[in-house]
Structures are given as structure tokens and as C-alpha cells.
Image 1 (spheres, helix red, strand yellow):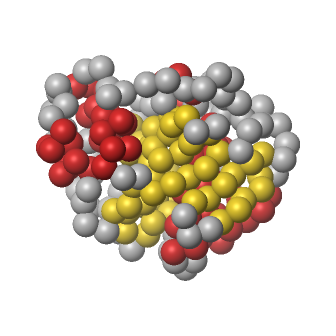
Image 2 (tube, one colour):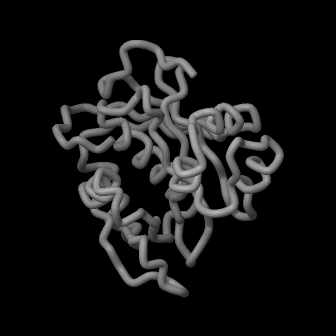
Length: 197
């Protein structure tokens, strides 16, 4: 999978709803069972079996999105309706695109789309406790560690962000958004120094 050069935080990114071919493209990012399990959770197999991958990915009340920059795929994420919240899941910045703070663009674009769908729901996500880079990213955006819903998963943190804080985030981080039925366009208006990928 190729990423146009250069991948940069300064160029606009677009978030599109992912189709089957997009999801299969993402499936080729994973080099072993550990990588795909850490990204997607239990139930995935390696080597990837296309039909099983798609069935595991497409759950009820779940929408999949692809982040592109200059026509190149750079990220993936899902918005699920779980726990009475917009639950963000299976978040991924492709290895070739990391190191450019594009996690901001992915997360903010997903938040923008989710608020357009329902502006009253808070946000949640799970993160592995050992994934300190992702944990730092979510904390930078205002997510807070809270008690897990249901049975405790000792290797995970459950994090939440209120819808009010999410709306403020979209207007206070120096990003410009264009929201249409087909896509969310996200472009930074200032430089961010935090290493979020």
C-alpha cells in the first residue's frame, strides 16, 4: 500500500465512509496475528480471510471510515453506537503515514461526523494500557480514563469525552472543517507539536 509523498499535517485530509474494497485494503496492513488482534480485538484471524474479516468488521450500529490525504489512504476508524455513546473503535494511522500527527485529523474528523449524526451523545473508546502513544494522543484531546462498562478488561483503559468538550475541541484546536453528506474535510490552521501517532 503506497502513501503519496510527502504525507504532512498541513495538507487537508478527507474522511469518507469506507466501502468493501477500502476495508480489504486496510486488512493488508497487518503482518501478524498480534497486530490485527491489538487493532481489532478478538475474533480476527491471520492470515486474513477476506469474508471473515469483513463479517468481523461490519457489526450492527457500526460505520467504517477511511481517511485520505492527496488521494492516498492514511487512516481508518469506526463510529459505533455502544454504551449509549459514540464509541470510536479500530483506529489506525497507516505505518507509512505515522509521525506526522495525523491521529489528530483522524480523531477530529470522526468526532465531527459523529456529532453531525447525533450532537447529544458523549464519546468513548478503549485503549490497551501498554499503548502509551495512543493513550497520550487521547489524553491530549481531552479523553479521560473512567470505569469500564460491564466486565473489567484488565489490559484496557476505557476513556470518555463529553459531547460538550468534543464540540469545544473542534473549535479550539485551530482546525478548519468542511462537512458534507459525502465527506468531512479537515485541515490544520496552526502547527501542533504533540507527537500523536
